[in-house]
Amino acid sequence: MALSVGIVGLPNVGKSTLFNALSDAGAESANYPFCTIEPNVGVVPVPDPRQDALVRLYEPLSVVPTTVEFLDIAGLVKGASQGEGLGNQFLSHIRSVDAICHVVRCFVDDNVVHVDGKVDPASDIEIIDTELLLRDIQSVEARRDRARKQSKGGDAEEKKALTVTDAVLEQLEQGTPVRAMALDEDAHEVLGPLALLTAKPVLFVANVAEDQAAGSLDNPLVVPVAELARKQGAEVVAISAAIEAEIAALDAEDQAEFLQSVGLEEPGLHRLIRKAYDLLDLLTFFTAGKKEVRAWTIRRGTKAPGAAGKIHSDFERGFIRAEVMSWKDLVELGSEAAVKSKGLLRLEGKEYVVADGDVIHFRFNV
Figure (spheres, rainbow, N blue to C red):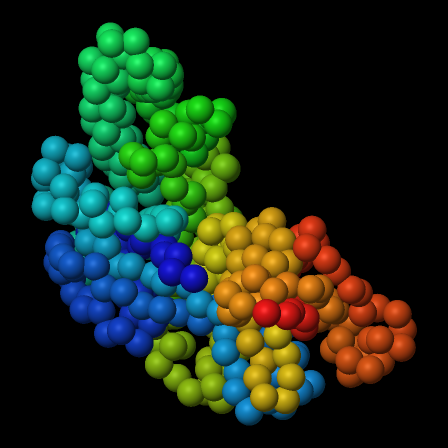
């Protein structure tokens, strides 16, 4: 499922360091603005203890996790919506992603320059938010102008578009992102083709100092980020990109020792990846056996035939039923036979909405 998360923020906040920790793509990271110009892309496995438990149970020949695609997008600056700092190019990269991971500098280090000369997380967020809002205002104004001209001829669809764009522009100019607006079906229909930047879900990543690697949201520099995230209905996670890069470079045994030394139960990246995955409104179901334990990604709300179609179009076309088990029941009872004997294996039809963590065998006929 080619869904992607764009890593954005001001220059020198740690975006590329974070990206390098997330993936093996080797994105360049350096202490000067606009180090990243073209987006680096990394496809990152989603850590999932449920799949790990199924692997221990089945000991399969192969294991296939689900993934999230991250794009390391160059740093934005004030005036990006007017073309500053190659802003037009960078904003177009944001338009192509499904969600935004906004990295905010929450550490003080005189050796790492800040584009504005001071560390102020709330101000940094405001700069990025303002540039995204300004670009959306430009896009909606252009759509309104077209609707205004075409509605004069009596086009009902364009009259609807004019009403929608007028209402949305008023809210954008007041600083309200599209994702925070109460929009009806007509508005979604009009705005959808515009791929508005502030319509995308956002995860704030507070990049903290190495001695704050445990990721507490009580850190004085993180508190304003958490407050802004709450107002926007967004999520926030605090991690140290520098520490995460060190952890990613270690083998499994050394990782465990290092995590213990810095007070972490798991890499902060695991929390970040899972939150990014949730941000995309995705869930995971599993197929499991001796040959393979595989995690599959679907949109929340997908029915059984649609989930079957993720495996193969024939499964969806010829869908008969789904044999469904809870991953937890399967792991706790130790075998599919035990799940069946307890009456916990369910036969579900075409209207079944797949739940997160389902283990499914599909029956089909083509």
